Length: 164
Length: 164
DNA sequence: ACACTTTAGGTAATATATTACCTAAATATG
DNA sequence: CATATTTAGGTAATATATTACCTAAAGTGT
Image 1 (cartoon, rainbow over the protein chains, first blue to last red):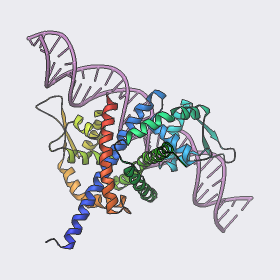
Image 2 (image 1 turned 60 degrees about the vertical axis):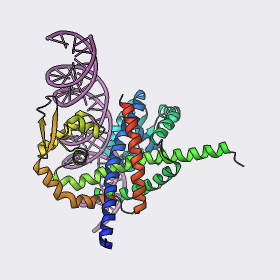
Image 3 (image 1 turned 120 degrees about the vertical axis):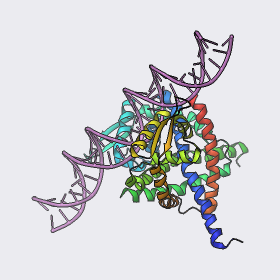
Image 4 (image 1 turned 45 degrees about the vertical axis):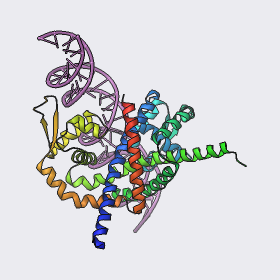
């Protein structure tokens, strides 16, 4: 009969295998979602990453955020935000304005056109988001919601640690 | 008192809000994991995406796969696989060889150095993967494993549909 | 065998994300 | 107040991922 050490080792192996699977599949799912959403947005001349940045900007901030604030909120670099913001400004969705209080800071301000677009798209956004999760029970969504909350927290800590 | 339609609508809103959160956080977590792992691998002169491609190659295929096969397995394009494969070949981890049976096909073959590296890294891989999931109960890992399996399936279908 | 289509991969341009390094404004500290 | 450090953002180079378009080999149908 298996002793408790063996049983523990097998448990760990099983867990590790599942973690490995989750890791690879999470990358795969984000890759596919990114593509699927980009197709949805193609007609509007914006990309998935630009759409994502607008979501973060409107959800995480009351007032127009600085480039660095957006970069932190998205766990990316100010250089990356600059590239996205420049394209969104060209597209007419953003205005990049210098803060009069602090001459180093550039603030990203959503334009009227952006707000109108956002209103207009809500229905389609709901349809495409819903379709990504079809086949999942309400209870599974709830579970996933809570687990992703924990992964968000852990990944944030490890990210900050790795950045140092 | 709320009628059943109202209750249903509130349920749907709650679910949609959770789905929206899951979507954004999944992108965020993959962004952070990608960065964290890249720091781990930096000393070995490979990137997270290169590491991921090697994992897929060794797990999904018995024999050296073609570029297109790897692209399909990773839900990306043959052009992208080409870029990654070229860098891995320069790094000494891959050999790109023409198939004598079918002159159109290029097969990606792991080198001796790659296999040795893989053996050597196993312990570190386990440590870094495990750390990504710290704070999650075994039951949560199991739940997440199953739910990600469903998302993998749905996203695959939607991806294929969007590709058409 | 011959035309038609499909499949595998190539090049090039563009978008996203990083590292590396720079300037200038703001802040801290003696 | 003068100097040192930190902070916000700039440019440029490189890696990854896509679209668009091309060639050639292989497969199909008659």
